[in-house]
Length: 287
Image 1: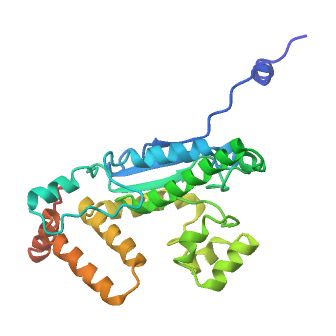
Image 2 (image 1 turned 90 degrees about the vertical axis):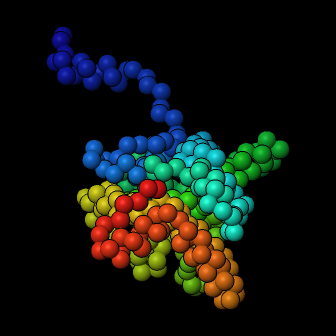
């Protein structure tokens, strides 16, 4: 008895045992060969588990984010800004900023799920031993570091999400509490009910909704539009916005804003932007 070649090929593949692809995050190339070089993609690669944030994925994601700007200072330490320093001091401050990356796009592998959250199988063991407690601590500490790192990364980070939104974890309550009214926040966190993209947009959980077929190209177009600006100006602007959000007093916010503006106008790219506007020409930024 003979099998047709295609059936024989299929039966051989079924018998072969291939090791599963390790869960990780990795840097990818842009989806278009002519895409701006200033956009970096980082992908969550754990599709077999709905791109769950296992410890290995979180540690890999942290590594990829840190690799964007080697030498930059993160994790709760305020920027050691030489507010009154000379030009040489300012240049030393900016040196670790990667001039080749102005925007980061965070996406995931597979179809339909950007990330299902924590790997529940990994954390399902009840911490009855020191070993279990240590594992849980590593997972949640790594998650905290990644969330803070995304916020403190000098470059804007765009999440390319293709899914409905479901929240049932404590970690999201931190950024959500800064953006949502109390009633909406509690409804999402306490029920975990999925919401459609339209509602997520109305709640300002996301900034834009695209059809699935154009999601990737729309995200890249947004990133390219941002990347036309100066990298240093973008970094300083992101720092100012997140710092303002953490301040309470109105006077404190205005005083900080004035300090940032005084520093901003000393940047070479800021001077170029003003000159281009006054000269009615396109700006040519160095950073």
